[in-house]
Amino acid sequence: MLQVTTILGCKNSMLREGIRHILSSTRYKVHPEDLSCRGTSAPQIYGHEPFLFIIDSNLYPNGPTAIVRDLKGQHSEARVVILADGFDFEEMKLSLQAGADGYCLATTGCEALIKYLDLVMLGEVVFPSSPLLNAMSSLSETANVRKESASVAMSPLHSERLTEAKESVIRTLSSREAEILQCLMEGAPNKVIARRLEVAEATVKVHIKAILRKIRVANRTQAAMWAVNHLSDASPETLWPQA
Image 1 (tube, rainbow, N blue to C red):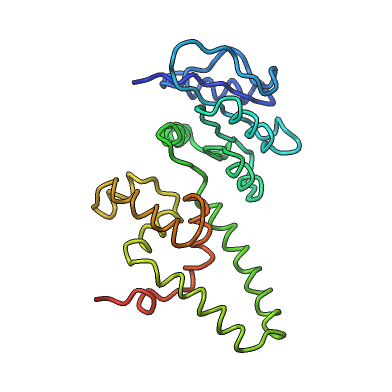
Image 2 (cartoon, rainbow, N blue to C red):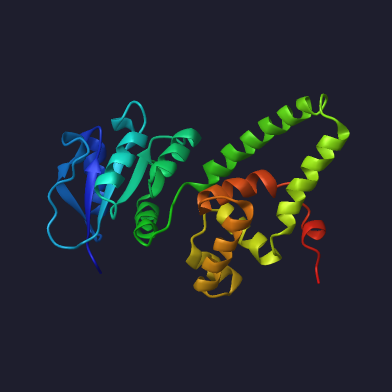
C-alpha cells in the first residue's frame, strides 16, 4: 500500500505523540518535523508519495482558515485535515470553503480516524455527520422562528410564491437523487452510497453532479446542508409520486 507522508501541526506534544502512536502501524508515516515550528512551509519531501497535513485547530487562535488556504496554495496536491476539540459549525464551514479535505473531532476513535484519513486520501471530504446534523437542525429551528415572525408582515401571495419556488426546485430531483441526498446528509462516501443503493459508484457520481447542478451548490458538503434545510419537511409522496 502506498505510503503517505504525514505532517502534523499540534499545539502540544501530548496530542502530537498521541497521533504518532495511532498512525505508527499504518501507511501514514509521520514526518519528524512539526508544522507548528515552520509556519506554513512544508518540510522538503523527496519522491512522489502523497502527503497529508493534520492541523490542530488550537494552534491558530483566529481559526485554521488562513493556514488551510496557505497550505493549499503552496501544496495543491496535498490533503489537509483539521482536528478540533469540539464541533464548531462556523469553523468547519470556513475551513472546508478554504480547501480543507476533512474536519475531525479529537474525540474520534483510533480506527475511525484512520478510516477518515483513508477517505480523504481517496478524494472524499469528511466531517462528523451527527454533530453537523444537530447543528443544522438547530439552525433550521432558528430559521423557522424567524420565518414565522417575518410572515406576519409578508403578504399571503408572496409567501405562497416562495413555497412554490422551493417545491419547484425539489420536484426537479428524481427519487433516486433524493435518496442520494439523504445519504450525503449522513456523510456517506460514494462507495457506501453505491453499495446501499446497489448501483455502480460511477452512477452515484453522475447523480451527484446532477444534484449539484439542480440545487445550485458547489460540492457535496453544501448539498448536505441544502438537504437539511429543504428536505426535512418535504413529503416524498407529494414531491416524488410513485409511477
